[in-house]
Image 1: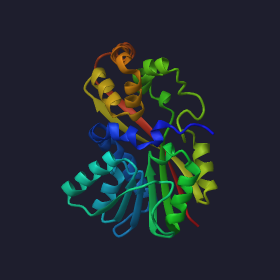
Image 2: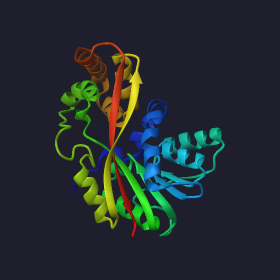
Image 3: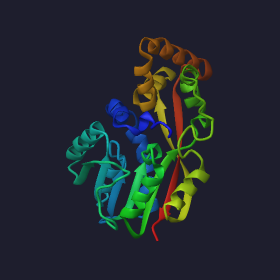
Length: 269
């Protein structure tokens, strides 16, 4: 049996929760808004957001008048969402729970989502099956995942030195879960969904400098934070090397990072 990825454990996401909210939420709203449109969410739609993280999609759906339930296994992410929900004066049912064993009866929701969450489940098939189970017939699910990071010259510049240090091969098939459209289509279809489509959606993040990009990206990345802890005293020299490499590749000035995601959409028959 293969080892469970550290990204399938709450600890990794607890480490980055504050920076994840600050650095990534505004851009992730682009993907979440697109997902809500694909699922046909309107006022009164009953929505579940699985592996909600800081609740980017859940908050948008609630603002639109949907009835929203949000689930995540990270206590820190749940705390961040609760705080933002109170601040925004919204009504969201927020639960700490397992996306592979959702605490809901069958046929409970009109639309189901997992934005950059299900892709890290140790049993993705079970995750897709749970979305299918809790949807009403005719309901739609949307699951987002990343295209290969090496398609972005900016992300390549940030992560090359880290990949070298860890001996990682990001271009190897399966290195990033659900990072090719055929796999996305096949896994959602295998769970019983029909009319499955896979679409690419882009979001951008602007940084005032290459140094700011490297710092922000490393602070908000769960894999990087795990590597930082594992490397101990080796981390600071590595971070310096990452800065040097990125500036050599891109120059020191302002940077715009384009993030590209697959949004896989299917209907429960």
